[in-house]
Length: 348
Image 1 (spheres, rainbow, N blue to C red):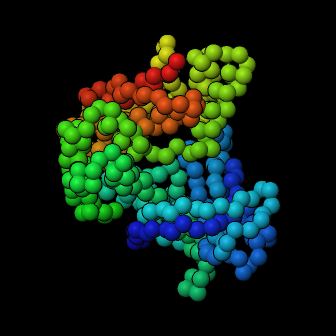
Image 2 (cartoon, rainbow, N blue to C red):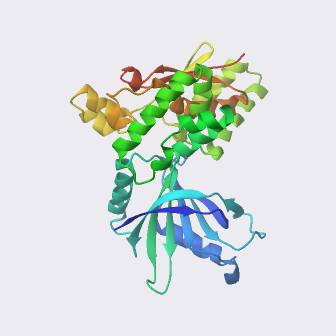
């Protein structure tokens, strides 16, 4: 099976967000949708987005969709929306879901071997055509960290300074070997550390983090606002948010509050490998979430890179509080610690 890089342009689609228990339900849902869409409006192959971050207690959350030629009115359980442009690594699986986990393992392993970062969802496309009656295409959605960094630097620096900072970026493609990708990143981070203030580093790099699903973030805001309406003060409303995160599946580790600071400590990325690790280096590698750096934690990389992870926490708490917050990196693998911990400073 051959790995391919693709850019999927933005397009209009009719979609449904569903909590499904079995894979076959995807095709049942798509068939129902086709019953409400004229054939001459369909503009491409059916697809399904699997959301990794969700609150489903069982099964999985998906968005099933059908590309259409233009926007039109749909039933209440469907949405007509513009799907954003995506960069993906694609792997053709075959005509059914047998051994699909093996194909996914191959796809994700190939991406991580190149140091590529996944977005918080993956896609499947269900093709029909003259060559094959039906085949399934798996897509690893790329979080283009380099492009985001370039965009954020452009907002703070002159064109000349930005060009110098990102020198060599044009040679870093999807198929660049992971060691080469890391060495380029290391040089960029050295320049950023030497040239920019701590505040600039934080503002720029924290905005390169994974994009937290908006449908999840708004839940935090709703909990916070409800607590305030019930007469709770700012910090008790923060406690209500933390209590919600503890009982909702979509948040991973549960933070704790001490005074006006909320501490968030990441869980290991690979818990089993972390448990089985025999050396400190093996534990650190199993703990780290970032495929760009997890194989190079013993090398000299600026700890400012971890502002990217701080950006994950920043999205949660800035949405909950509806104001700017400062997220401090308290512990980091890049600082020699055995975990990554962040302090979210709650404004008065």
